[in-house]
Image (cartoon, rainbow, N blue to C red):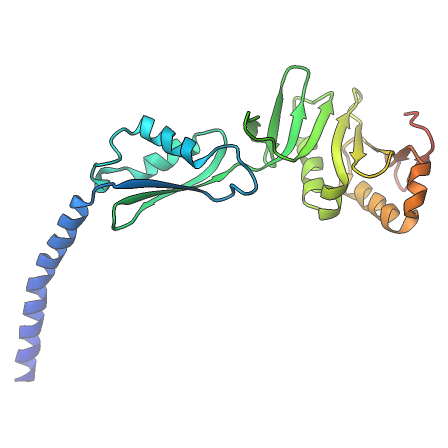
Length: 243
């Protein structure tokens, strides 16, 4: 008898399942896009683009968003379109039951601002170029001088400085000489740091950090104009800048 009751219960459940599924499907079809909400996750750090600019960009390219059925939207296509903007690194698109289309984005994060004779631009840590913005200037390490066509060495130096809290707060500029020797300009002190060719940079910076922390007293830094790191196993402090 119990087995028959179980069979009846399963028959009832299986009978209701297609009905419930059809209601869900109809409900999804009927969900109309009522609003677009944009969140720029890292807007406190960078303001290359605003949420209003992204919203306007979307509505111009997809006029059939507001007031249209959400299930007809291609979220992957929308994400690709948003990520194609030169300031945006990542985009995620999803919707809620009340018909709100959510757009969440993260911007590209520059580590260097490069100045050449013809232009200025930002570089992300992987070498991606970001145009400058009229509305926002990122507080990044400045690079000028003879900029090489290949950014690999420059990016390596930039990453080493940016990934170390001590150097990130201490170094504000990289100048590249015509012979491809790098000069670092610190925020504090009147001295320059001659890094030399961008080879064994991490080792050279380790020597310099030891000098900063253990070698000289704070008032002694004003005595020197140049710290030379280009020679192996040597740190030369000079009272002039003859390089």
